[in-house]
Length: 273
Image 1: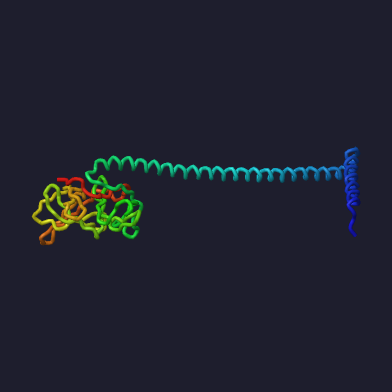
Image 2: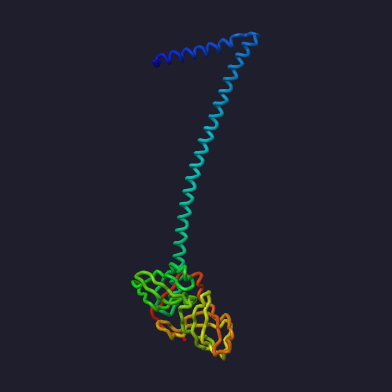
């Protein structure tokens, strides 16, 4: 049988009165009776133990509460830091783009050709030394076969054209051949990539006296290829196996590891001598 709410309240009040009366009795009695003293000590021990337990749980509760607040604050600070880092990256990239535009503008004024400025936006991961992608295409006036250069020298030729991007066949590719001449000796030849970051100049006669450091430039014999663009410099000369020609290794003038801003030559404004 369940008790009513008023009954529970009466029992609770009765228990409280009994406990209070016991405490008054214990503290009021002044006796040497060990049993009463032990009884009082027992209740005192319970009271002190309860206070310690209360303090223990209150301390741990405060610790966990403070720890949670610190963790939440750290998370907010981390999110703010990540946001600032992302904004800094974007700002740095805009600064680099501005520097490139300023530098490219200065270079463009010095080039003796009519050019289309372009940005390298990718390299072929399966043909790293063979292909690059630029952000200019048919809509910007790019057509197949045009020569691509930097202020250092020749980069390659346009191989594929799309509305707003193009594929450049790089000078380092074995698939590209360029007519060249050695500026000092006037020896003619053909340069092609060796697939390892250097170029090979073919058809140089054994009787030709080339030296390391000789400048190699375009001969102007190919379609849309102006004369006088720097291709590179002679880095090594190998005697042939008794044949008519010698093997000449050419180090490209352009730094292909740092391709960024390039220029597509639309048509030469003058012929370099």
